Structure formats: C-alpha cells, structure tokens
Length: 208
Image 1 (cartoon, rainbow, N blue to C red):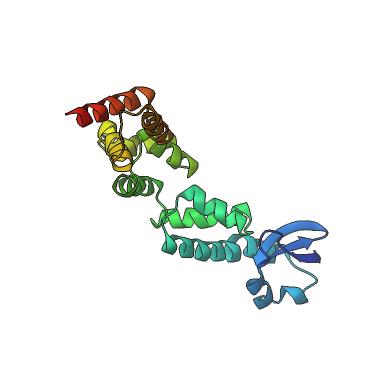
Image 2: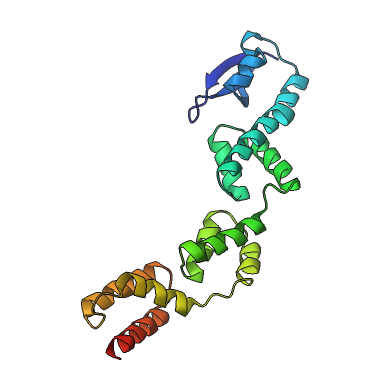
C-alpha cells in the first residue's frame, strides 16, 4: 500500500489528510505526522493504518477533548462535533467520546442538570427555551424530560421577575410598553396566556 498524497485539512491546517493508493485513508495531526516520519514513508502496512486509526488518532482526539472540557462543560454531541470540525475522522471522534464517557468525563445527564441550574441562576427563561437550548446541544429527549422534572420551575414567577427587572421603571399602562414587554417575554419562550397574565399583574401592581 502506497502513500500517494498528504495534504493539509481544509478546515484545520494543523491536520494532515493522508491518501493511500489515491484514496483518502485518514487524517492525523501534523505534529504526529512528523513524529511518525510519515512524510518519509512511501509504503504503509494495513497494521500501521489500523494502529493510527484506532489508537493514535483516538488518543489524540481524547487529549483534545479533555482540553475542551477543561475550558467548560460540553455535551457528548458538542465534543464529537467539535472534534470532527477540527479534522478528526468520525471514528476517532466517536472512540474518544466513548472512552471519556466510560470514565465519567462526558455525562449528558449531569451536563443537562448543571446547565439548567446555571441558567435558572444566571439567565432565567421559560421551560420551552431551556428545552430548545438542550436540544441544540444534542441532549436526548428522554434525558431532557428526566432532568426537567427534577426542577420546580415557577414560570410565572420567572416571567414576572424578568419583565419587572427590564421594564419595572416604565409606565406599564402605556400600550407601547406593553407590546415591548409582550415581545420580550415571547422571545424568552413564554406562552401568550402567561404573557397576558404577567401584563395584567404588572398593571395591577402599578395601580395599587
């Protein structure tokens, strides 16, 4: 088997794409490509290819994933997606994720629980908005439902506090301000009925 080409990855120039017998075989970090002297090789065995794909690349993808997790918590989907964006093959990304899951570094249930807890403290929003954000991060519907049930979300109180904090100094009897409040809360994922109730409550509070 002959290495016929080695080119920089179009999305990440630090990764080298290796072609064997004119067909794409695998990608490998340039540093590792140089360390293994692949640039000097013309012939490569099936065993060497297997080792690079199943051991070397998985190890390197795992190291990169650990650096990501050190910066902030991420879901399984986020880690895998980012590794592929960085030029790792899907199998290497998947292998790294599986290893990190097995030792507890990636845990979508814990991630979702912490995510909701942090959001409720720092950036409160509706249940609908929280579910949408978790779905974007690749969390499964079962995990989302399970974790959401652990939190007692008083959406009415959350919506009221958000509206009061942003528009409490304005005249809420002004239709223009009411439209702003309605738009603001709707954007946060609150239902029409809840927005209506919050507006009524704010007007009532002002008239006391």
